[in-house]
Amino acid sequence: MEDIIRVENLQKKFLDFTAVRDLNFPIHRGEIFGFLGPNGAGKTTTINMLTGMAKVTSGKIFYKNEDVTHKMKKAQKLIGIVPDESNLYPEMSAFDNLCFCGSLYGLTKKIREQRAKELLKTFQLWDVANKKFHAYSKGMKRKLTIAAALIHQPEVLFLDEPTTGIDVGSMRQIRSLIKDLNQQGVTIFLTTHYIEEAERLCDRIAFINRGNIVNIDTMNGLLENTKNFSTIEIKFFTSDFDRKSLLKKFRQSFSELQCTFEDLQTLRIISINSIDIAPVVCYLSNEKMLIAEAKLIKPSLEDVFVKMTGIEIDLMKKEKEKK
Ligand SMILES: Nc1ncnc2c1ncn2[C@@H]1O[C@H](COP(=O)(O)OP(=O)(O)O)[C@@H](O)[C@H]1O
Ligand SMILES: [Mg+2]
Image (cartoon, rainbow, N blue to C red; front, side, top):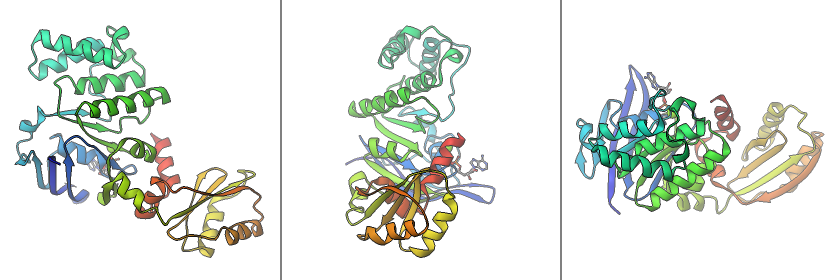
């Protein structure tokens, strides 16, 4: 498969703080490649370097085998960028915003109006094409921001947390639009801190934490790791207990197991070997925990992620809520 983009030892420092270090990866033409990691991991910094919005501290960026590290302008015609915060004009209508973006890429009036119309239809915004951008809902704003990034028919689309902070309906629509675009041949690079989003959309995933890539693999390759994993979910009768202290005590008694709370009353336990469920249940009932249900479940990408990064899922969820 052709590498449309490749980075070598890419690094970004802010003064003496290294935000991302030693990034080495290709982006294959036609794939959906995802950067998955918590807040502050270095996702936006990476996108900014790859799209020429931030200066590279060291390392190289290749677009189609040409070193463009210091001439990102050259690559910009190839790419579309959907930043985490929209870059469109609040006082302009949706239609005018798209046409304006088209003019930045040198499209003629006729072509940009035609593209704007097409895109508004695809994104189901044609009915509200004349509304001002600021009057749009968050989900509509995100959709229009994606449409704007596509005005010049880029080969690669960069999306920085495309579904963060929007309603569930728009989230679904955007995920399906991303899939459609990819099927039409657009290569996609996206960042996310939603594990299930990475799992659903991406062909390949890089786990990133504190500026380091912990692992890069195909979805199938990552799930291969779970073949021998055992995951147990234990649901308690109530959520009225001290989760922190239970986790602490549990980890002392079962140091080989990874455990995290899936929700307020569900404990998730992951082991890289097969585990015996009985001692776990015994231990918890000795701790006076009333168990409503205990079951072995099929391991997921979430389990691989927890195992490889050591990041607790409840932490990723907290990051989510902060936004
Ligand atoms: N302009 C900046 N100046 C100083 N530090 C920055 C700047 N931008 C980002 N950082 C730091 O770099 C790290 C990575 O940030 P970022 O790439 O935004 O993470 P993510 O997008 O994964 O949440 C964070 O610790 C952040 O505080
Ligand atoms: Mg970010």
